[in-house]
Image (tube, rainbow, N blue to C red):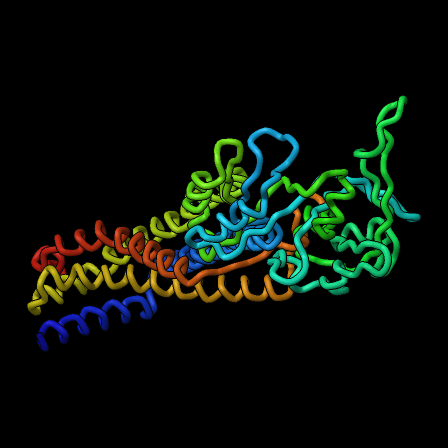
Length: 416
């Protein structure tokens, strides 16, 4: 074992000296430098691209799960709503992995104000003791959730930050909600008008939610939509979001034939499938940069074998085995790949940290639903990227290292 360790140090020492030594052929040094830069560029590009993909995925998932449920139970065919919802909620709460079950009632309304009127989704939630709070309302930007239960004046409403800004309805202002479910007259349905006081403003960072959603108490929503004690959905929160599909199947066995259960994965399948496909395409396209760098490593080693054929012959005549000579050039390729990988990882993760912290890349919220490009670099990506880059670098050494072992001392030193 000590002899093997000493031989390994000898091969590594010779390989590192060859890389550091000044050469007569400057082009080899240039190609070696280009190889290091190529590996570093490929690794850095992969780190940044995957961090952007992970950032979009995690930000969208966090925003969606903060505003919507993990599993939603609703009617298969829109009708008069879910009547016996208290008993249904009690059954659903007993399912494995279910943390909470909340009855909700939502519908389209028109929010009128002196500045500007906007369409919105009004969502009624259960308030008071014993009720579960919607995730995005646990920490309001302004106001208090408890104010929804205040019966002393106008009913309370909580607006998204963008909706509040567009309609000019700040905290404590009075909003008018218009709904088409009103009194039926000989001339058709007459819209109903309800006045609310803005008791809170929330902000998720997700444009579609902050721009269009408003919350009120369940009883107030039932009055606005001219309904009795019914809801149109029961929203479940679970302890592991990855088990949402399993919990949805369990819920369907409990709710009966007229209701259906759907998970957050099914509701947003198109978005996450697109991100998954984009990740695959990114890995393939940017991985070509590392392949080009590997070709440069191959070229540099082939030219180095041609330059060092006399040294190889001398080493062989002094007793160096073919396997040792082969390892010298394998070590050279691995050193090039390792140095490039380390530089690429350090540069990539530094750029990701700074870009996410200072939000370098801004986006149009109305198009992308986010105000900036989020970066989420993960350590597991660094592991497989580094492993792939070093493996490709090793594969690039196979041909030139084998060529080096074919050099015979007698032929190489004949005219020396």
